[in-house]
Length: 345
Image (cartoon, rainbow, N blue to C red):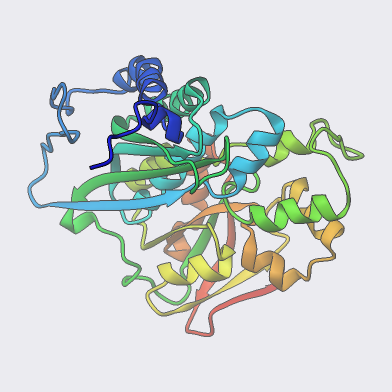
């Protein structure tokens, strides 16, 4: 029988248990800072525990997603904290769109070679986002997988779970013709379309350090602007007005996401009724990208939509603005025909 090579080890193969332990140690305080009364102490446990209370007929809503190739922009710029906020806010908005309140979050960070400081920076960003939204970060995982990931490449994924009463679930089935579509502004690219957004820069040989004419920030700053969360604003809206449909505008843009919130009906959206962040104009011009493709890939300035009765539109916009969100009425529900863009009304 061949004796094992005394020099063989997990470390020699490319995986360091010590680096993983260091990353865990560096992030522990950030994680624990998000724990509210619902978190059940479970030191050393294999899963996070959370106590649901105050609901008569609770419905759980859960989602999982990743930051995608936005991590490549962060690696080039050398700034990772915003990625933690990105994945928390993205997942929280998905849960929010069902009618549920986001409650708990878990993160997953993988790399070919873990850098404990970078992982801790990502998790600190996630913890800060969780704190701002009243979400508990109850668990996570770090993985070092040389061969699957190259060098310091990162993959960042998050999962969020929320809950609500069964009667508060929003499916879009109550949407009616004539209802108003309210658009909540995005902060920019959010976490979608980065493969195309990066390619147009590369093809034009532009640097993330560049400041386009008329801008007061670098391209890297614009590309790394965190994904906006809408939890507090939409919660304020729902306390005041009946909301019939909600959509988080992610990959697929307005055509691919708003249609999921209309219960089989269509919508007519008014061109020019919302402000488009300058980053989209840059991408459109650099790549010569057709408008239909821009609408299909990017949010173009609308990060979330709420559908309310037409008579409630003005009040809905007022409530959202009072909550700090410059919302606008951007369209109306029609009988069918998908999502149509028409000259501004």
